Image (cartoon, rainbow, N blue to C red; front, side, top):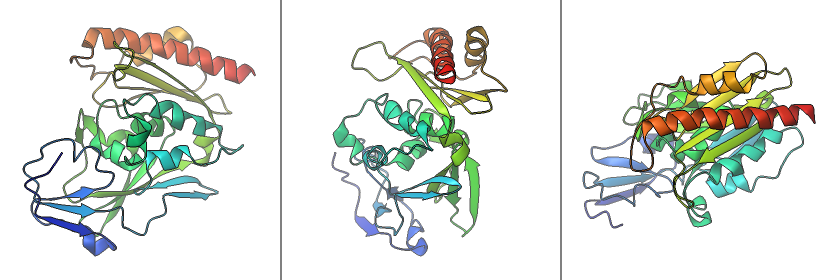
Length: 271
């Protein structure tokens, strides 16, 4: 879509370039900003020209830079010490987007857009990812990715803040994962998604997205029973109703999907 109100475009190459003038917003993949009229925008600041590596590995884990597209992440070679990487592709396929979108949309952009059905949000929250946020006054803070979405399309980020990268700890990447989803239409956006991770210690994490405005995280010291998993999933407080499903339907299905996720995790633990 043409943004008829935009009169300026800047390529950022340093932190100073990230300072927003009135009416400007950040541009990464652009798959959302060009899909809406956005008539209040007068300028775009392209962060894809920042000198940031899209993928960086270290002993601490995996860093995904703000310039990393979904396709780039999915093309990262599998590693024996990071079986949880399989969750990236599963989550991407829970997003109503083609491979063409994957080639443009960024991982961080999907998080910052803060949609309830943010596929990358589901994966990264499940893997205990944290976000490094650059503040407009020069400060830096780190928050769990789970705290960024606060509503459907609403984030906790302040104007002028930039998510520089997200970091996934090595311990989480070493876990085993599962994902189950449901949609009212075969080719429709997911109405409910439940993801899970079990670590070597047995510690288990379950995350509900798409069914809720913000991610709902439940943690257990050991793999829970299917009944306990379903109960924990249904304790989310932000189930909602829209054209893709009612709140009651989403509430019920979150429990059903949680049971399936735990069953899958039990199989991987036994193997």
